[in-house]
Length: 142
Image: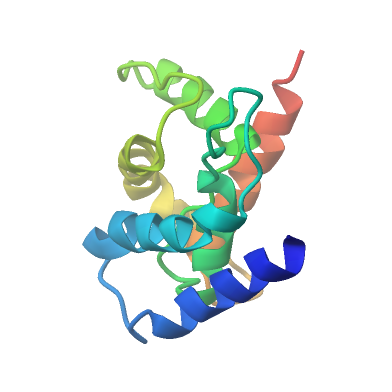
């Protein structure tokens, strides 16, 4: 099963265009997840488990300068930051498109600071932001 999932994911990544617009990220993530559906684990009710975290991480391999990585830590961090910014609340179990919407609003505000603090000239400021979200989300676990 794991080998089939990896093959399906790699085939889908190969089929994606070399370049991508930020507005296409959601569609690309959906394509990638759909390509993997037959190889994904099933829930207790027999339905295929949705895997936006897997899809976003795989998609990041293809478009590292554009793709926000979705995982539970990042969701928790966005929830905290959106509350501090008096934004509407990001629900647990939210879909990737909604997560990206929140992520982009917050990223736009902090992007200049991240660029300024990027002393080692890491090529992907998006990933620097994701790493900070992961750390914040991990530390908010109770």
